[in-house]
Amino acid sequence: MNLVGRCKALEIALNTGTREVFLSEEEAYRLNLINKLVEPGKVLDEAIEMAKQILQSPALAVKQLIAVSNAFFNQIEAFDTEINTIIKTIEL
Image (cartoon, rainbow, N blue to C red; front, top):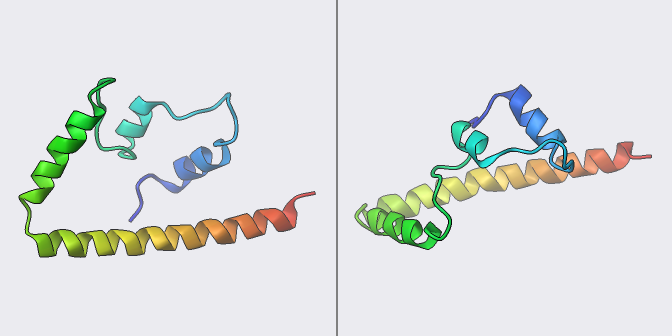
């Protein structure tokens, strides 16, 4: 599952340490990296509303979807570890 194309992903990843280039909340929303823009001070209210909606779904389905999501993010974590190892070997 790709959230953004390879070129945009590399641009984001390779510029995360710079202050000159950053990803605005609007661009993150446009790229589907975040699912909702919320007014300041309304985050908790929105989170509670989202939790209420999730509670209306079948518990087994929610549990299985969370398991799949966790498996996906575990793969990303393993990839990040591998990338960090590669970076350490090429650092001067």
